[in-house]
Amino acid sequence: MNISDYKELQSLKDKRESFYIYFSAPNCGVCEVLQPKLEELFQNNFDKLKAYHINTAMQPDIAAQEGLYTNPSLLVFIGGQEVLRRSRAIGLDEVYEALNRYYNMFFKE
Image (cartoon, rainbow, N blue to C red; front, side, top):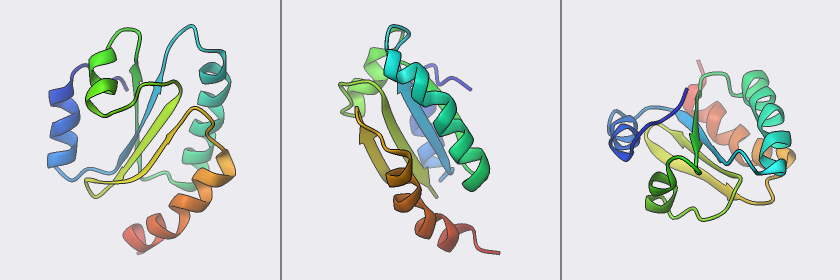
């Protein structure tokens, strides 16, 4: 799902939603390779986080307001709080390690 403006992102944060946003641009080869791998990682391990995408070529203002000036970038929010921010060189193992414990504490049934 795409986020169309900064107000929409603020609304998700205000509602204390749990989600992740992948920032990429169509001319970014790394972005295109990484996106399906990140989607698989989140589906298999962090399925309660909703997925969002921002095309920084179409909506550079949203990325800029979040302080992200490079592609690809990843923001993860759990309970409305930012718990992970990565840009450029995003390692799948690093993302898993950074989120696993926090995710399990928040969503443990």
